[in-house]
Amino acid sequence: MPPAEEYPTGSFEIYYFSVAAQSKKVTLRALGIGKDNNIVVLPVGTKAPKWKVDRFYNGLYSFTIGGLSATYRTTDNHIVVSNPADVGYTWTISHSDATSPSPVGNDAYRVYLNPPAASKAWTLPVKIKEVEDPVLFGKAADAGLFYFKRV
Image 1 (cartoon, rainbow, N blue to C red):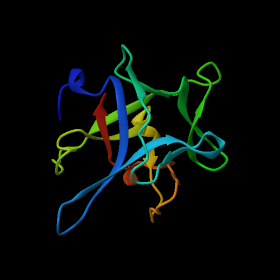
Image 2: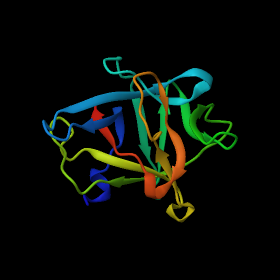
Image 3: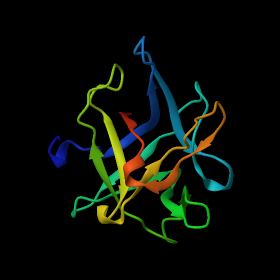
Image 4: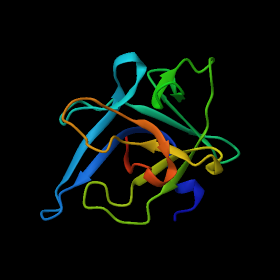
């Protein structure tokens, strides 16, 4: 695991990615804002929006996109964006020890609610469709793997 100073902070495009079993071809799908301020996995080929990832003195992170902060909605367990003044959630970022095919390489991470003992993370639906799929607030054991591309 890289030292904390090597974890993402700054401006990024954030992607859900999948790797084809035989060809090892990587498919990238950007994370963006969908209906009802849900964070969604956008269709392949959609231009990726810019995320701001801030690291606090205590090693926790915040995610903002379009001036709105990532949080979660308890009614349906979706990761959503909200006015930063309304609610401020901090997140823990965990680096994946596995190296993925290019372009992901060593830039794959999981995002957990702080404290990690909360056992909740950013997850994905079991079946990813070609439309906008919501990023969910689910069990830490099911945490999705995301590619952080510095921009």
